[in-house]
Length: 150
Image (tube, rainbow, N blue to C red; front, side):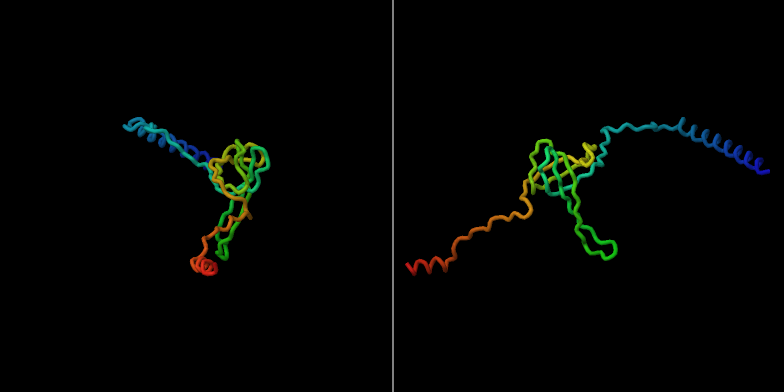
């Protein structure tokens, strides 16, 4: 009994498929629009990942280590938390130094860890290095006191 029910269902499904394919075939055969539209310009889909960070190590040949800092809210407490991650990137000309700000683009893996390439470089200063203090001209009161004293 179960085998008869299975065959009747499969026969009904086969006839349904045949009917559906003939209907779809008729629609495609009599349609006036082309099935594949050729665009005037080729589509350009760019799904490359780009990240920006600071160079923390440039001692290897053609490889730099970049630290990328992200700020995201904590899932429960919603406080903004900093998280940092290091990436290895390919620097063909060995032009990046520690402290530079670089933009990295995803590429095919060059080694086990190196899957980014340097796209853009901005000269920066190493972390911990301070700018020199600006020297200001003497105040008018100081210059008057020195003139009176002389």
